[in-house]
Structures are given as C-alpha cells and as structure tokens.
Amino acid sequence: MKVLLGVTGSIAAYKSVAIARLLTKSGHEVKTILTRGGKNFISSLSISNLTVNDVFTEDDFWLPNQKVPLHIELARWPDIVVVAPATMHFLGKLAHGLADDLLTSTIAAIDKPVLLAPAMHTEMWDSRVLQDNVTRLKIFGYEFIGPYEGELSSGDRGIGRMAEPEDIIERVIQLGNTERILRGKKVVITYGGTEEEIDDVRVITNKSSGKMGISLSRRAKELGAHVIAVVGRVEVQPLYYDEIYYAKSVDTLSMTLEEIVPNADVLIMAAAVSDFKPVGRMEGKVKRGENLIVEFEPTEDILKKLSKNKKPDQIFVGFALESKNLLENAIKKMKEKGVDMIVANYATAMGNDFISGYILTREGEKIPIETLTKSELSIILFDKIAEKIGQR
Ligand code: CTP
Image (cartoon, rainbow, N blue to C red; front, side):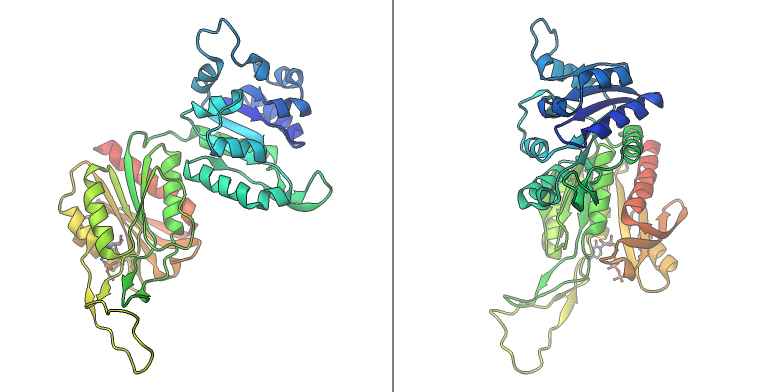
C-alpha cells in the first residue's frame, strides 16, 4: 500500500517516526511531508532513512523545472494519507480550505481517504473553535483516530494524547484497503425522527436519535459514495454528507424524497417516520385546562409509494422496527414496501448505540445481527448493498 504520511508540528511527532518505520517494515511504501512545524521536531534524514523513500519539506514546494507541480504529483500517488500528529493549526487550515503549504495543498487535491490523528493539549481540543473545525472535517468525510486520554507533554492528564502508532497503522491499513466500490454512486440516507405539529408550539415525535444514519453515512463515504442526507429531528450533529436536506414532517420528507430519489442509486430509509399525524392542526397555542383530545390519522407510507417508481438498478433498503414477531413482521414489510433489503430490529435500538436483529434480503437471506454497534452494522449492510450493485 502507498501511504503518504504528513507530520505537523507537535511534540507527538516523535511517534510518527515509529509509524514510518512500522509501515515500511511491513512492506508498505511511505512518502512523507514534513511541515515547517513538523521539521522542528523530527528530521528529514531520520524519516528518509527509515522509509528509504522521499521526504518533502516546504523547500521542495514550487521548485523551478517541475513538470507537474509537486503537490499534484503527490496527491496522485498514495492509496491513503495519514496526518500524525495533526495540530490545531493544521486542522483549522484544512477545515477552511487554506492550502498555503505543501501538505495542505496536496490534501486539497486528493481523492483518497485521509486519516487525521490529532495531538494537542486538552484545553485546545475542547475549545469550541477546534471542535467546530473537527465537525466540519467530519462532514467532508475526513476520518479521525483519537485523540485519547493520557499523559500530555505538559505533564497533565487529559484528552489530547495522539493515538498509538500501532492503532494508527491498523486504521491506515483498514481504510487503505477499503475498495471505493460506491464511487460515483448517489446514496440517499434518511435518518432521525419526524415531527407532526399539534398546534403552534407542540409536536408529536419519537425517540429516534439519528445515530444510525450517521454511521451509515460514514461508511458510505468511506466507500466513496456521494451521500445525500435527509434529516428529520435528530439529537446528534449530522456528519459525513455531500448534500443535506432537512425534512421534519412526513409530508416534507415525502416531497423531498420524491424529488431526489429518482436520481439516486441507493435509498436507505433509516428515518423513524411517524405513522400518525393529528387530524387538522390546531391554531395558536392550546390553553391549559381540560383534557385535550387529539385525533390522529395515518400518514402515507413513503417507502411504499417510492418503491412504485423504483428503477430496476436502484437499491432500496428499509428498517423495520418491531416489538414482537420480528422476523415475520419484517419479512411482510419488506414485501409490502417493495424494498430489496430490510434491517429488522427491536424498538430498543432507538437512540441506542447498539443494534440486534437481522438483515433480510428479497432473495431470502437472513443475516443475524447480535448486539453490533451501528458502525459494525453499517459495514455489513453496505457489503450486501455492494454485492447487489455488482449483480445488476
Ligand atoms: N416508513 C415510511 N413511511 C411511513 C412509515 C415508515 O417510509 N409512514 C419506512 C421507515 O423509514 C422504515 C420502514 O418504512 O424504513 C418501516 O418502518 P416501521 O416504522 O418499522 O414500519 P411501519 O411501516 O411504520 O409499520 P408498523 O408501524 O405497523 O410497524
């Protein structure tokens, strides 16, 4: 595997020497970019000796007589980029497209996974501006490892310690080996709960958090997909998307999907769509007083409606949330809603980090899921989706 290692200016840079050495020893090709700050902590000579390969610094950026600019040449070379350590300053530049040196310019031109291993003092990691930049970077699909809690260079303990070289290498290999099988594919992922208005200030909703959708989006981006998130009421910050639509009510969700789904390759309906809405929304704020009786009517089944116009090469995936007769009900839903696959899970998964149940396919496959994290489920689900895309 070809790994481009970026080293920025932090005391944790001594660990990047170990990353370079271990990767090279296990047969990977490593080229390195040392930023101005990185060069203050480790030398080009030690890295080039360990990697037996090129090490670039700012002195190499924009040299005369280069046929292809160095940052473009470097951006075309690797299978994966890892920046370890990644400082607050570097993350800030990356988050805002400030490509003013060799490393940021190279990453700006890259179309491969980029893994970031931050290292900094706890107060810096916790600062709002840094956290805001991390969120921005995750939205764009950058992958993070750490930082973790531990001893810091100041002698304090806290979050900010860079991940250990072995763990960074494991993630580099995992990400670098991930075939970008969904490159060029549009994947629509709905998540969160819907909200139906009762009066001007009150809504009826459900316990969905949106966590499942974020795990799905992250995996879809890892696989190179163009992710279109359609988000209802969520408790988490939407991340890992190329486009985002906000749709809280069943009607808005339905209208939004009708517009975008015809151009999508994959639809995953992880949203917890309300099955009922109040009959006639009440005006103003209903005053406190007597018992309030709200009559509900059924909402339209969005997935069922969309499936009627499903093209043969499109793949639709639903989620079936059940409190009893899981398999029986989910199989029935898969057929009725005309989807290719359904994730049958228990109501307890709502808002939770774990999920149990089955992935069911039209072809009759029944893949058990036993207390998996939502990220683990996303990996298995997209493997199945990719398999189906391959068959069409
Ligand atoms: N769904 C939908 N439109 C609805 C309700 C649900 O598109 N009005 C979608 C969900 O996003 C999910 C799938 O259908 O992918 C199954 O949702 P679920 O709540 O499990 O089933 P329901 O169809 O609501 O049936 P029931 O409430 O009877 O279990």
